[in-house]
Length: 113
Length: 240
Image 1 (cartoon, rainbow over the protein chains, first blue to last red):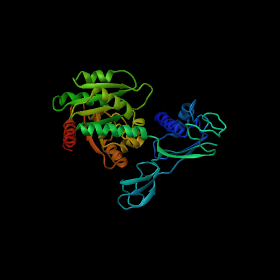
Image 2 (spheres, chains in turn green, red):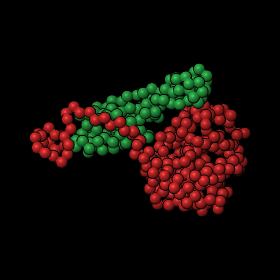
Image 3 (cartoon, rainbow over the protein chains, first blue to last red):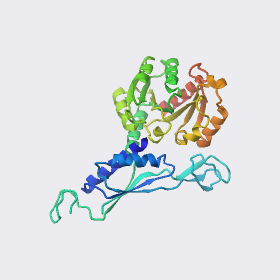
Image 4 (cartoon, rainbow over the protein chains, first blue to last red):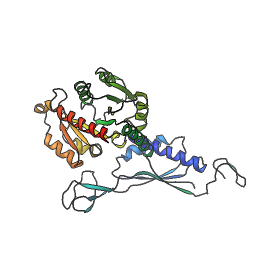
């Protein structure tokens, strides 16, 4: 359940932003969690509901943007979609690739109504 | 209305008012606090020429036995230190302590992984020597520790032949982020349906750059390669 650590990390960031802005709560939060980030969404949802109680995010609407996995083959340069980290280049079958998207794990924005 | 102080506005504050419907562009990495502390740890290790290794595996792959054997065989060849991570008990630290090595136990309680903050405090307490080799034995778990950089120089994933040879495919994040894969308990190969070539192929499929060593920490078979690997990496740590 490292998803709980992730939820706590998000709350820390929200607390810092709340102190900076001089507010006591947020009404919305946007997260970017890539499909290759290693976060199990069902676990995250469960951890999130518990973690936000009594915090500045308790009543914040949660929006999650999920960038899909994309890679570029380091042998032939072909760009391709990756659903598992070990997917091969569909053109040259190489394992050598650079992950271009899907590893994101960040707080994009916080909002007030 | 100001949500911080409840006023209706129109007077001065020591805090800034945020506009209604305001969106704050945060764009912050969720792991930034961990990553920042991991870099502080790494800087400390680099400054003292300490080779820090993060040992990860599923429970029962033989990480502690591998360390016991290593610390006993290599005793006196370098200043060794160990940080043990477990949810509960100091059993592993006691085993390491019995080899005469400096050891600190971290109990994570409910936590399923070590993080850079825990290691930061453990290192403050233990003060590893100049040129030391510091092993951090993470909590036995192939999922959660993958995301948390501790400030190590190399991540070493241990798997054993009593597990499935498809472990790298089942837990790709851990194998993807590791530098070395140690396949332990090779003395049991004649008795288990573990295809070692398949396991190596699976590990390389996830991470083509991963180095792989086959060892038995019980019989000592293959341990020499592991000791050579450590020696080379330690010389590199001291040379830079």
